[in-house]
Length: 79
Image 1: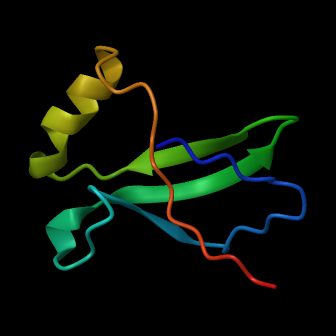
Image 2: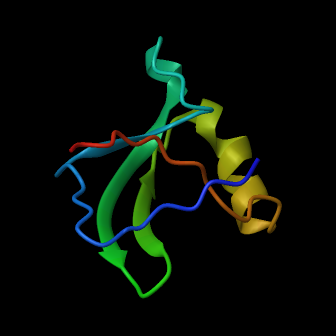
């Protein structure tokens, strides 16, 4: 299942947590935060700040090694 959303008119909250698999039950689920976003023609680009905690280090290594190529975002449709 692939969902395509029209990102025109999209707004992003000023501080967005970067979560592990959409989970926010514990502090260890928070991997960092989204520091800025930019809407391009067909995509959203974000700048992320990852936590310096020891338990996030392996995830940072996987990102730097190219094992993580995209992210999943949660959203709410407002009409």
